[in-house]
Amino acid sequence: MDMTTNDGILQRTDANSVATLTLNRPAARNALSTGLMAALQTELDAIASDRSVRVVVIAANGPAFCAGHDLREVRGTPTRKAYEALFAQCSALMLSITRLPQPVIARVHATATAAGCQLVATCDLAVAADSAHFATPGVNIGLFCSTPMVAVSRNLGRKLTMEMLLTGETIDAETARAGGLVNKVVADDDLDAAVDAYCRQIASKSALTLKIGKEAFYRQLDMPLEDAYTFASEAMVTNMLARDAEEGIDAFLEKRDPEWRDE
Image 1 (cartoon, rainbow, N blue to C red):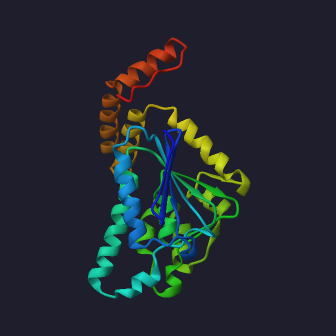
Image 2: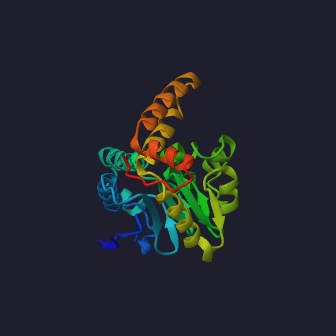
Image 3: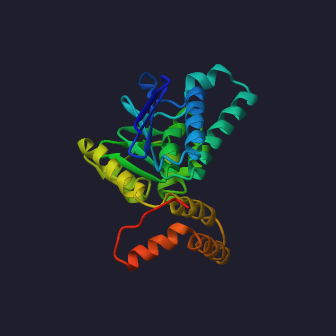
């Protein structure tokens, strides 16, 4: 069922098994205020158990995808307690994206800086318009982008990540693609079509299989090689015992389309 909700700073639209969460603070370049992060967290928590949603897209309105944290809000309460709460909230949000059963795609139409670049790096896939740019420019204002660094360094190579962190300079969309920060770069007018193509392809798969695979992917990344194979082997066994794996293999052998039950 198609659905649209709008709480002002975040819009949610559901259609064709895809939930699109659109950042809607255009005047603030979609800076991640505590309110916007809370709204995102609420929607992601709801989506996690929503069997009707098979793919999530994070998009944005206005002249920027996301400018990072809201610096006016940050400076409004200059205490250790407030800073600790802010970065704990942001880290929890990013982890929620990684742990979400459904794949998450970033639709990047413009600049993504600091925590906005972190948001792109955290998503499972990212599609960027060729006019998009990315940066971790905190060093320019005396604030090293340490938390964005966590996600960005798990996408880009060390040298490029350090160049972005140490200089604060932007990289263009093609450099981001070549480095691994985004999957595809397309003409601005083709951005929606490219995101939709990913959504249709992913939504056609077994949701249970994607859930098992996504969890296994992130958990094995930092394991020693032997431990990763042991863990991945157990994940394969669990997957093989699922009804959808049996159906998928039988459908392949019988040369027919599978009928997924997500179980």
